[in-house]
Every structure is written in C-alpha cells, then in structure tokens.
Amino acid sequence: MSKSNRSPSILRLGNREVPLRVARHAKARHISLHVDGAAGGVRMILPRRADLREGLEFAAHKAGWLLDQIDALPARVLFGDGAVVPILGQDHVIRHDPKARRGVWREAGIIWASGQAEHLPRRVNDFLKAEARRELSSRARAKAASIGETVARVSVRETRTRWGSCGSDGCLNFCWRLILTPDYVVDYVVAHEVAHLKHMNHGKRFWALTARLTANAEDARAWLRQQGDRVLRYG
Image (cartoon, rainbow, N blue to C red; front, side):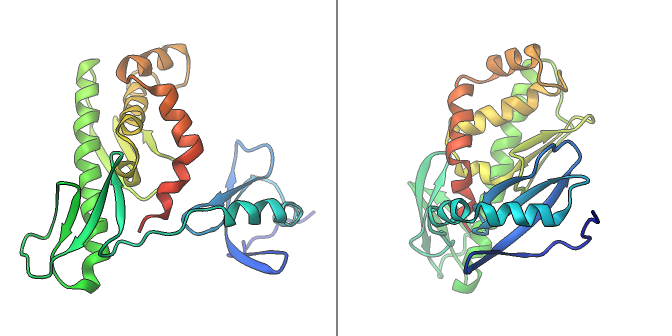
C-alpha cells in the first residue's frame, strides 16, 4: 500500500471540518488521535511507515468521540481588556491603560498594559513569555545548583507536545504556557527536567531525584494529564 506524501490541514468529521495536524513518530506503534486544544482540531500521530489513509479512516470511525471532545473544550480567552488570565495559579485581570508609559506590568492581581489597543494582545503575550523565562530560569538554576549541576541555557517557546526537555548539552527548554499553570505544576516540570541533568532516562534514580526536587510530583502529573490542554486556550 502506497503512503501519501502530503498531509491535509483539514479533517472532515461527519458534516464538520476541523483543523488537522499530522506527525510521524518513529517509536509510535499505533495510530493515535488527540484533540488540539489550541486549534480546536485534531492532532494525529502516525507510525513512521503507516499509510495516511489509514489514519484518516481511523479518525472517521472516531468522529463522534472526537467531536464530543472538541465541543467540550473551554472557550478561547483572547488577551484583551477585561480578560482573566492565571499566573502560577492566581487569576489576573488584564487592564488597558493607554496613557501609561510603563509597558506591561503586574500588580495586585492585575496585568496592566499601556500603549495602543491594537498592540495589547501581542504585548501581553510577550510579557507572559518574559515572566515564564524569568520564573523557569530562576527555579531551574537553583534546583540544579542544589544537586551540583549547572544549567547551560534556559529557553522558552511555544510547544504543543512537550512541557519541557533537557538536552545532553545541559540546555533546558520549556513551554512558555507553564506560567499559566499552578505553582506546584511549574515546580514539578522544572524538577523533572533538572533531574535529567543527572539521569538522561526515566529510571528509578531519576524518579527518586525528581521527588527530592519537588514536593507534589504526583498531583502535578495528574493536573497536567487532566487539565494541561486548558492553558492552550489563552491568547
């Protein structure tokens, strides 16, 4: 059976069309489908040699379930005046003050933003990424120092499939949206990646070290499984 070269960007489910992202993973053994909380569509994971048509047929068979999951997604929250955005588990209201000359800043549960209204979403987005970089870098370097390790670099970016990663060169990468999760979740993800500085695997010693570096690993993992996709609705 021949394998399709081009992946469609739209998936038809019954009478509806939804965004589709297709990825091939060398280690995947079965076709899997996941609801994309950011796009309100579907992410399809295919084994390296799987035929795309099999994936599309599988998605069609699961159309009812997929549409139920998509319809259950929380509404998008755009970064505009009056929007409520969580930072480390605490809700903050975005307020626009066009006459101020302070850029974007946070105080007493409010994210203040100056400048023109049309630039507000981008400026708030940049502010949250900067907050994430500061918070994640500070925690990572402190935890690494506590176990005698050094972090080469901390990067934050928009990622869809991983909350964090650790390179063999000592560089840590995180999803900036972690700043929108509760404090103990951020702490766990940082601890997880810092533990990889000593153990580049998921063996017993790795998990024991992770438990030493953070207090609520089990609760954090449960939160990410059950509610992690919710932070994709912001922005």
